[in-house]
Image (cartoon, rainbow, N blue to C red; front, side, top):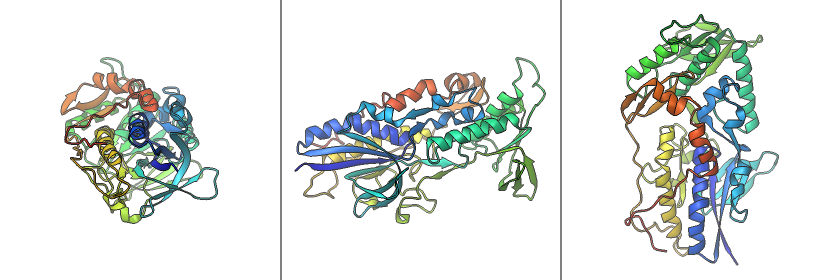
Length: 421
């Protein structure tokens, strides 16, 4: 009788997709050679039919005439069609629970009525985070995201006033996109054109882009101003009420009220962790993860976390890029050293440790011609931000390679990390 060992990845974002590609391309072949009497099977559980390239969401949410929706979605059926069905299965379903004692993941398909339990040998939790505004991330499925994009496009085109809350990258980017698209941008050595739409960006911080130095935030404000965007600091929205005429009444922390045609909350994210047991979560609802090894130690052996849902992450793309080699190495070590007679035994040798990149790194397009940014601590000109990211929000550089897995390269372990098999 063949021993079946399931490797389960839960999540439908970039971290889950890259992890799944890595396992399918590099780990499954190794495991097949190691254990002839064992069948390893990769399952990926995701609620949407498509992977959404959320990096580009500020532009596609502004107008699909700037960036078509077809360019930011990749069907999982096509993504995983390159792999044998005997080895890899993609399941469109929502994760509903985790029994880490019995090593079971519960899920429910979109059209299913009953919860299904899937046994796992190894589990990677990569359910990510969701934004407060549905056009910027996948809340449930592709249809929900598309509907939010279409609604925002239509509302922006008809609006005379727009308010955006959030002074981070997403808030600045969407404010810039809307200002550029609706108000236009000035030419060389000319004044900004007359405003067609009043756009206001609110932030509770005292500067824009608070994760980098103030000078870069100040540059972002100046460039937003040329696109007809006003910035208000130390201002927090405490309530947003949709009125019968379609407008939104905002209540601010100081008691002031604002009426606007379109309100876009672009502040922060929420971890997609509601399906996980409370004993595995931090007080902020992130999955409690070993910040060096990326294992979820309190959930038992061979459980890992990657991306925004994890407590190691600062909710940045860099924290996925830098952590994937760590996860890949430690997962490989654990799987290849596994002994069924001693299932809880730790892998011999040295684990790879995650080390966050603490240098300033941020690229924020501001409209379709400029931006503000810093690379490894060095401030870069707006033209460079446009050249690298602002032209198409990295679609040409990373969309296809992430979707197909061609950009996922094998991680070589060191002599200290290696285990015999």
